[in-house]
Each structure stands twice: as structure tokens, then as C-alpha cells.
Image (cartoon, rainbow, N blue to C red; front, side):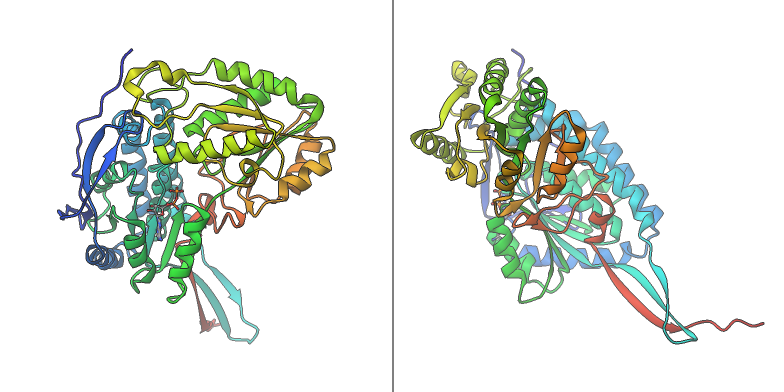
Length: 492
Ligand code: ADP
């Protein structure tokens, strides 16, 4: 079996500030979750360095906001091309530190590039408007302006794409940014620094500061030089960050946790459902805020679906994402395995039934120290079990029975979250009616991966505030200013 290797690194494991690498004393270790092996040590940015990064971004932003929208767009589109060109090296690095299979990492690089491309195009469409004044002789000009410096905080499950969504939107709007990657996956962010420079991003405009969430996040939340905070992370961290930003009344944009319902309507094609559900739950080993967390299936179809899922799961390969033909990699660390394991154990004790699991990673001695969790199908799950109430960050497929569609919809909405959801069925009119009745930011109808750069993605309820992607994603980094002014006199 060939195992891909780490690429030769073109960056230093140090904070990237003002276009240079900054040494420091405090380090943390980055490991490959498939093998437990150390990849490298990375220097943490301390509070003083983060403050310096914010100030440097402020200086760079004053020049950047004066560039034309077309110039900004060209830089972003060049970055999209660079990501495409370097996709193999980036994907190998991403798999080494995150664990997802190489093919999924390649997909993430392309997804990241699509945001640079999209916002590269959108930068020239940040329109203002002229509004008639109620008094004669005057008019209002509503003009969009870049918000300033943005603090960007990203998680470890899509460490490149989540950064790309935020950095591309901020730059397109004319903002500078200070990006804090997750401590578990800082390398792919640092790898992006020199690529941004190559694309034409001026020094200091995008500062990359690995470090502790509380320290770096704390400075970003409190420093008066930061105008907008954008976080993708857990609902708990969103709450903490919002509270930290409250004294300065900073604008926040939050993409948080979910507990996505997946409603299988009585007429659904069960082969299609099983295939898509398996792909969705093996994708990044279920460590995805939009993954299906509660599969509502009609009581008459539960066993037929369970059998199909068991067959597909048995054929999947769970292992080192750097090897060929792997469908699912490890979880991010052993603590994650213990947490998901506890949810499954509790569900089984409360009456759920394990229909299938895949332990194909067990046979590989090289993976003994890896943090693997066996993809599992559970039937007979009830709404009151923790596995159905909480966001499960792992490859577990919980089947919950229903007998009436309206009841399934009510139960689907009975959660404090509202991020993603899925509806599968043959009758599209019924699918659309059910989709509209679900309280969630996005619904995939007979589709397991609906997120794209072209659309605004954001949650309702405790899943977040604001949106990423679409034209709305750029607006998160724009302030509107109104100028009330006399109208130029028209000479007859
Ligand atoms: P996940 O469940 O994806 O690990 P977290 O919410 O724990 O999500 O982390 C998401 C990001 O938020 C990470 O970069 C993490 O370092 C950062 N973070 C964690 N705690 C805080 C905090 N108190 N303030 C700001 N950022 C934080």
C-alpha cells in the first residue's frame, strides 16, 4: 500500500506577521491523528504579538481599501489559481494534520479556491444606492465602506476552507485581517501565508497567529483595532466570544454547532438515501457541523434502510487518509473518540440497537496510536437520548422512527440548533413543503452536500449569526455610511 508523504514545507511553523515569520518561546506540538506521530512544533503568538498583528493589519488596510475593486478581485482570483496549482501539496499537508482522506482534502482545497474565485468576482459588486430625500433639494447617498480589521477564528475540521471563506470575503470588502487557526491544525493556515503574498496580498494585510483560543481570541475580542469578529466553532465558544466582544460592542459573525435532521419521506428511494447518508457520515468522519445527526425514517422502512447502510458501511475502508482508497480517516484526537463512544454506549444502554460498525482500521498495526472511531449505525434511537439531543462529532448514524410526517417535522425542529437539514423523497412538492417547514439555515433536498460559495450559509437559533458565502458573506465585512447632502443644482 502506498502512503503519500508530507510535502517539503515552504513555510515556517511560526506566526506570520507583516510578511515575516516571528520566532517565540512557547511551542505546541502538531500530530498526525492517524498515527499519533509528531509533525512539528509550532510557536504560539502571545497577547503582545497579537496586538502588534492587529496594528500592522490596520496600517496595511488603510492602503488596501484605496485599491480598486477590480484590483482586489484580481489578487483574490490569482490566489484561487495558486490553490488549484498547489492542490496536491496542500492536500497532503491537510491530511497529515487533520486526518481526512487525501481525496477529501483535495476537495477542500478546491472548495477553498472557489471562495477566492467567488469573492474575487463579488468584490466589484459592492454597490451603494441613491435614496430620494423627503425634502426637496437634498438626497441620500448610501455608501458601503470596509469595516476595518477583522478577527477571524477557525476550527480544525475544515482548517483551509473555513479560513478561505473568511479571508476572501474580508479582503474583497477592503478589510485587513488577523486569522487565528485552531491549535490542532495550524499548519495549513501558515502554508497559506506565502501563497497570499505570491498572489499579491500586501504584507501585513493577512496576519496568521496560531495560539490559544482564550489568549488570541481574547485579544481579538477586546482590542479596539478590530472591527468585526468572525468565528466558526462550537456554540459554547460562540457564546464566550460574543460575551468577550460585548464591552466593545463589536460586530460578530458566528457559524456554530448544529444537530441536523435528515428526514426520509415514506416514498424516498432507500438506495439513494443509504448511499448519500453513508457518504455524508464518512465525510471528515462525521466531524462536520452540517452532518446528519438525526435520521427520521418511517417505521416501516427503518430496517430496510438499516440493512442498506450496514452493507455500504461494511464495504468502506477506514484508515490513514494518506493511503489510497480510504473512505474515512481518524477522529481529531482520542478525547473525541471517548466523547462519541460515551454517546453510543449511553444510547445502547437506553435501548438503541447497534446494526453495524466498521473496524477495518484494527488490522493495521501502523494505526494503533491513531484516534480511530468505528463508523456505526444505531437503530431505535429516541429523541431523549443524548446521541439525538447533542451534536455528535463522529461517524454515527442514529435512526429515529416516525409514523406521521408532520410529527417528524415537529421533532426535527425540537432542538436549540438550526444549521443544516436534509429531506429525501420522490414527491418533490412534498419535499419542498417539508423543507420550508424546517427551521434551519439550509436544506438539502435529495442532496447531501448543498454548501457552495454562491449561496449564503448561516444558522438560525443557537447555530449562529450572519452568513458566509453568497453576496451576504461579503456584507459581513462592510459598514454602510449614509451621506445626506444637497443635490447638485441642475442648470436649465
Ligand atoms: P471545535 O469544536 O471546532 O474545536 P471550538 O469552538 O473549540 O470548536 O474552537 C473553534 C476555534 O475557536 C478554535 O480556533 C479555538 O482555538 C477558538 N477558541 C476556543 N476558545 C476560544 C475563546 N474563548 N475565544 C476565542 N476563540 C476561542
